[in-house]
Length: 95
Image (cartoon, rainbow, N blue to C red; front, side, top):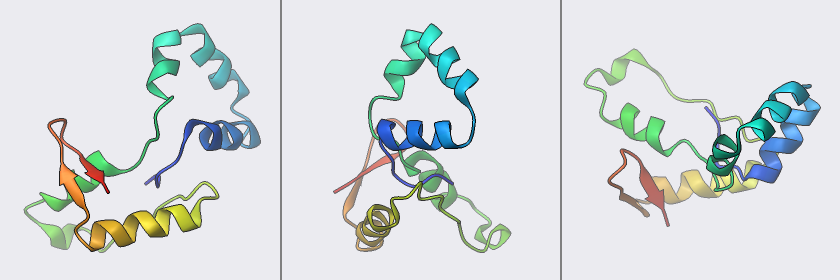
C-alpha cells in the first residue's frame, strides 16, 4: 500500500512511471485534482485491516514509500506508539 505522500511526490513518481496521459486526464477534471492536494496515506486501509475478524488471512503489509522512507518510518513509529486518533470518515489521523 502507499505510504504517506504529498502531491508533489506523487506527481514526480507519476512522471517517472510514464503516466503522463493520466496526469493530463486529471487536469481535465479539476475536482479530482483538488482531492489530491492534501497529503495521502494508508489510514483508511489500515483501519480496515485492524478491524478484520480473521487477521490470520494476512501476514503483514508492504509500503511503497515513493522515496519517503524516513517519513513512512516515522509514520509507522507514531502509529505503533498509539499517537493517532480515529476520525469520522473511517480512517484515522496520525499525530
